[in-house]
Image (cartoon, rainbow, N blue to C red; front, side):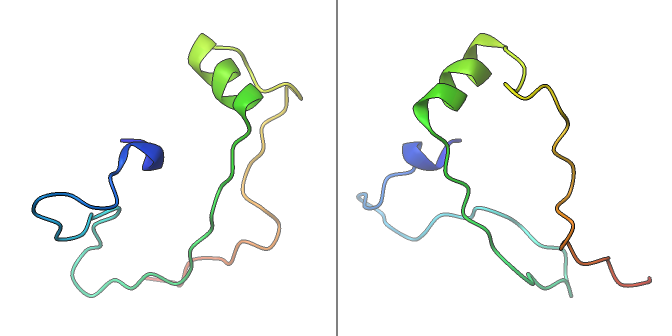
Length: 67
């Protein structure tokens, strides 16, 4: 489900679960991703990223804790 398809209000508004965490897990951050119309059209048509590169994890992504 795309975020734009989630209604803000409805007959039985009880909230929307966007992610389910395992017991004992905690969410440590949240990032809003804004797409422009060109990216959406390319993604729907199956085109690759315009840059042709793999945008892996950001350099400032924290390492997961040792289990």
